[in-house]
Image 1 (cartoon, rainbow, N blue to C red):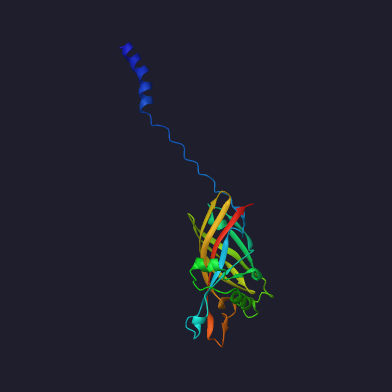
Image 2 (cartoon, one colour):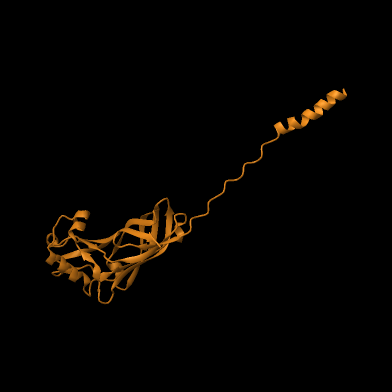
Length: 226
C-alpha cells in the first residue's frame, strides 16, 4: 500500500501539468500612428487648372469659347499623415500674372476641339486680368488655405478657404491623396462661382456673349518631402 501511495504521489504533479490551462497569449502591439510630415509643392511636376465655360444661351455663343486656364509657378506646402487625416494642412499660392490661357495641349486634354490663335489667347488673357475680372494689379495672388480634412484609405475630403481678388469663400474637394517614395500626390476637383468672389463673369457686346458663373478647379498636385 505504501508503495502504491508513493507511485500516485509521483504521478500527480505530471497529470496536473498536462491538464493545466495554457498561458494567455500576449496581446498584439499596436503600431504608433505615423507622424505628420511636411511636403513642398513642386509646380514643375503638378498641374492646376480652371475650366471656364461659355454661356450657351447667349445670342453669339457660337462665336465664343470654353477656356482652360493653367496655373504656373504656384507654390505651397502640405502637412500630411496617412494615419491621421485631421492632422493635414494645405496652403497653395498661385500668381495671377503667370496664368496661362488656353494652351493647346491643355485644351486637347480636356476635350476642347476649337483651335485658338495666339492673338485670341492674348486678348482673352488681357480681359481675364482686367480690373473687372481678376484685377491682377491689385490682387496678385490666388490662395487656398485648408481648414479641415477627413477620410481614409486614400480618399479624403479637404475643406478650406479660397481667396480670389481679395474675396474669400469656402470650398470643399474630394481628393485622392497618396504618398510613395517621399512624394505626395493629391488629385481632385471642385466647383465654385465667379459671384462667390464678388465679380461677374466676363461678357461683351452688351451680353450677347459671356461666360457662365460656374468655375471648375482641377488639381494634380505633387509635393516632395522636406
